[in-house]
Image (tube, rainbow, N blue to C red; front, side, top):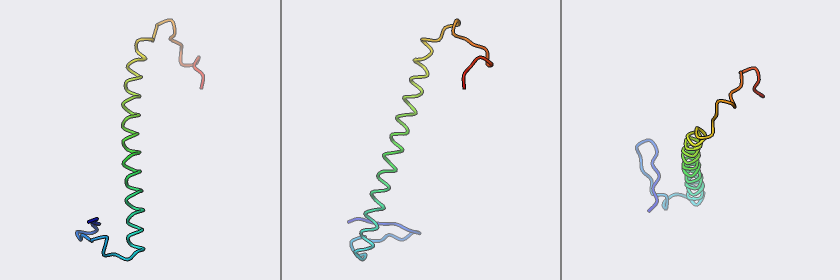
Length: 72
C-alpha cells in the first residue's frame, strides 16, 4: 500500500482518483530524483575535499605568485 501524508493525515493512494494516483507517482519520481541529486552532491563534495588534500602534495614555493599576478 502506498501512502501519502499531509498535515498529520495519511491517505491510501490506491483509494484516490486516477489523476491523484498519477500525481502521486510523479511526486514520488521527483522525490527520488531529488534524493539522487543530494547523494551525487555529497559524493562530489567528498571528492572535492579529497582532491584539495591531494593537491597539497604538488604545491611548491616556486609556484607562489603575488595576488596582482593571478589571472581571473
